[in-house]
Amino acid sequence: MPQDQRDYYALLGILREASSEEIKRAYYEAAQRLHPDKNKLAGETEIFLEVQQAYEVLSNPKRRAQYDATLSKQETESPFIKHKLLYSRANLVHLDETQLIYVLMEIGPRDTNQKIPAPPLNICLVLDRSTSMQGDNIDVAKTATTQLMRSLRPEDIFSVVAFSDRAEVLIPAAYQSQNERTKLQSRIQMLQTGGATEIYQGLKAGFEEVRRGLDPKRINHIILLTDGQTYGDEQACLQLAEEAAQLNIGISGMGIGGEWNDIFLDALASRTGNNSSYISKSQDIQRLLIEKFNDLGNMFAEDVLLDFKKQDDIQINYAFRLHPEGGPISLENPLHLGPILQDTSLNVLFEFMVQPSASKADLVTLLDGSLKIIASARPTSIPPIRIKLEREAGATAKADPPPPVILSALARLTLYRLQERARQEASAGEYEQATRHLKNLAVHLLSQGEKSLAKTALLQAEQMERTQSFSRESGKEIKYGTRALLFSATEE
Image (cartoon, rainbow, N blue to C red; front, top):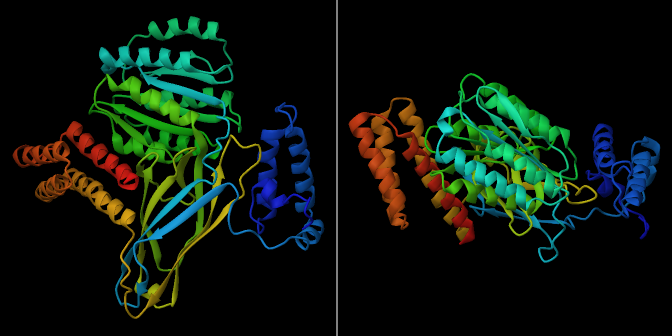
C-alpha cells in the first residue's frame, strides 16, 4: 500500500475479512458521525470524504479485490488500544476429565499520557418518586440533581424523568444555557413523592429523552435511581435495554437501601455493558451520582464488544468485569465487556471449562473472536482487534505458577461467588447449605482482614439459622462488599 494512502478498513473500523453487510453498516455509522450537515468541526469534512471514498472502493467487489492486492501485511497491534492476556495455567493436560482455566484480559488506551477531549454528554437521570422515596431519599436526590446541573458544560444535554406508576419529564433533553438550567432547577425542588414503583414507565420515558438527543459522538446514557422493586414489567425493561444497547445507549442502575431487586438491576445494566450500584444510606446518593458523572465524562470508550465463534467442547462458564465497573457480564454473544476510562484499563476475568475431547489436541483454542471498541470521542472508528485465546496441551502440567494478579483476583472472586451461591440456596429453601457457605465466607473474609464484612456475613448466617430467611439489606451489603474487593485485587 502506498505510504500516503489511508487504510480503508481501518478508516471504517472493520476487519479486512468484513462482509459486504458489515462494510455497509460501518459506513452508515461513520456517515452519521461525520456528515457535514451534522458535524461542523474543522478537519472532519475531509475525513468524511475519505470515508466515502473507502466505502466506494470496498463496496465494489472488483475494486475491493484490486485494493486488497496493494495492502501490506496487517499490523497485529492496534495503534489506539493495547491489550494483555494472562492465563492461570501455563498449559492444559491430556485428561479424561474437564479442566478449568482462567484468563484475565486487560484492555486500555495505548497512550495514557495524551488524553483525548472529553466527549459531550447526553444523559437522562430517571428518578424514582414513589411513596417509598419520601424523606431523606428524595431530598438528597433532588439536591444531587441540581448539583449535577450546575456542573454541566454548554455542549452537554441533560434530562430528568421522575416516575412512580407513571412517568413525567421534568427537564426535557435539549441544549440549555446556564440561566435556563437555573430556572429549571425549581422543577426538581417542587418534586413530590407518591404512587407505586413501575420502572418500565420511567425507563421508557428516559430512553425517549436520550433518543431525542442521540448522537454517536456523544456519551448517551441513562442513570436509573430507585429504592423499590418493580412488578410484572421486568421483561419489558430488559427488552428496552437490548434496544438501547443496539443504539449504544448505556444504562446504569443505582439502588438505595435494601428493598430494590439487585438481580434485576444487574441484568438490566449488563445488557449495555454497565452495572448496578448499592447505596446503603441517603447521604451517599450525591457522592455516587457525582462519581458516575465524572466517569462518564472521563470515557475513552463507552463499551467493548467481544464477538466470538463458539469452540467445540469449550464453554465460557463465567465472565466478570473487575474494573472500572465491577460486575458479572451477561454471556450472550457478543459480550458487552464494559467501558474503558482514559486513565483506567478495562479488566475482565473469564472462566473456561474445557471438555476432555478438546484437551486431546496439542493446541487448544479457547476463544476466537474480535474486540469492537465503541468510542464516541474519536472522529473515526477504532478498527476491531483480533483476539485468539490459546493454550498448549501436553501429557503433564508445566510447573509455572499463575501470575499473582490472577491469584489475587481468583481469591476475591471466590468470595463473591460464595455469597452468590448462598443467596441462590436461600432462595431455593436450602437454608442449611446457605448458612454453611456464609460461615465459610466469613472465615475467608477474616483471613483477608475484612472484619466488618465478615461480621455482616456471620450475623446473616446466624439469622438464617434462627429464622430461615435472608435479609435483603445484609445480602446487598455482602454482595456489593465482596464485589468491591475484586476491584482492589487488580489494583494490588
